[in-house]
Structures are given as C-alpha cells and as structure tokens.
Length: 282
Image (cartoon, rainbow, N blue to C red; front, side):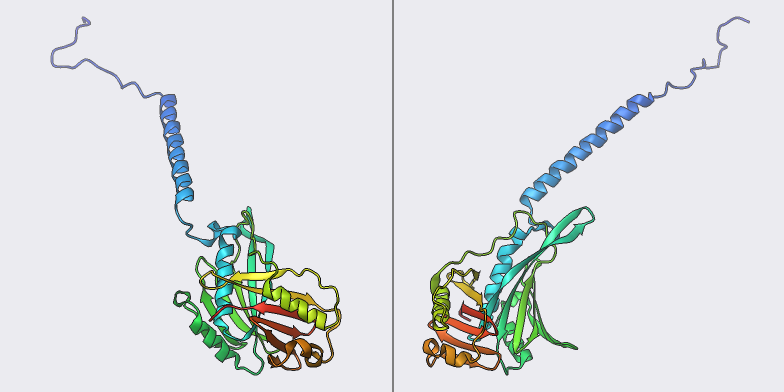
C-alpha cells in the first residue's frame, strides 16, 4: 500500500500537547502573591483609617480618656455626697490571644453615705448618668447592682462595699498596652491645701507633697481631685481633733467616718485614711 491517505479519512492528529506543569505553577504562585499583597494593602488602610470595631483593637492609651471621663460622670452623679476617687489599677498578664498579652485598667469612686438605702442611692445616680449609658439598677442575691455602658467597651458597675460605702468601678477589660495609660495630671490646688490644713491641725508640722487622683468633670472645664494620706495613727476622737479646722461645716459624723467641708473641698477621715476631694457639679 502506498503512504497516501485514503479518501474519506482525516489524517491522524494525535493528542494536544499538555500545558507544561511548571508554567501552571508559576501562574498560580503569581496569583497567590498578588492576592496576598492586595489583602495586606487593604488591611493597612483599614487599620489606619477605620475606627476599631472590637475592644481588642483599642489600647489602654485609647481607652484611658474614656475611663477618666466616666469617673468624672460618676462623681457628678453622686451630687453633694461625700466621694473619694481611688487610685487607678493597671494589671498586666491577661491574654487577648494565645500569642498576644494585654492589660486591664480599672478606676473607682467610693461614695460615703451612712444610713442611706444603697439601692436608692444607686438608682438616683443611674438616673443622673448620660442617657446613652443605659444605666440601670437591679437587685441580686448580693444586693443592688448598678450597671452601665460608658461606650468604647468600657463597663461601669456599682455595688455596696460595706461600712456604709458604695463602690463604683470603671473597667476596660483586657486591651493591648500600646503606649500605656497616663492618668490626668493634678498638682496643688484646693484639695492639697485643705489636706495640709487638716494635717497641721492633727499636729503634723511637716506636710509632704501628696499625689492626687484626678478625673475631668462633665463639660471638661474643671477636675475632680482627691489628695490622700494614710496616718500612722488615726485620732481616737476625730471630731475633737479636727474641730479647729472643721468648725460648723461638718457633713458626716459616724464611728467610721468624719467629714467636713472647707470651701469646695470635702475632707474625710475614715480609719487611718485622710482624704480631701473636690467634686463635680451634678
């Protein structure tokens, strides 16, 4: 037979050449790299420009001012009651993820109101807090509890703390530390002067410089401040010991607490703790 193709039959073409595997791999690798680069750019833009959406994205430095303002709101909500601002507590060691550690920030205000109904006081304060906080009081097996949301994932709680005290706390939960928390600066002023006068009346000739705890009042035009010292020995009769400086401005006198006002400052002696506090208007 000759090698010519028979009429009516197509010459065999054989299978198509396959695309080389190496070429497919290069295209796949290029696509993956491009997609990863796009995700990276979008993530960077989001972190830079978008507001945080969960608390784990907000550092203590970002949450600190929210906490400070919440403390000022609580002081204002306490009205003319005797209040004491407590030092802040920053605790490290909590975990945001198995690989990322963080810290929590807590600030507190104590309200001294012997003889008052704790539920009534907490309810009155809740009614004075900003509407957006959705503050409310409920009764639990352990007594009344105030709960509110100060925004930015900052929680506010209030409860009886024993000894005719109410303790209201402001907490952040676990956050990245970032630049860290910086408390509002406060030096000198009426609180320091009133505390110094009380110490001199108690016989302390040398008055040390006392650190103060501060928070911005609602509106931001003034500060609530507490200056505090712990006495080596509290007077057995506070009313008699502080009478020369208290005069007729006593606002609280119980076996646990003695307090008087000196101008805009409330000076309180509770056990060995002597404090002088300027409050915020309700």
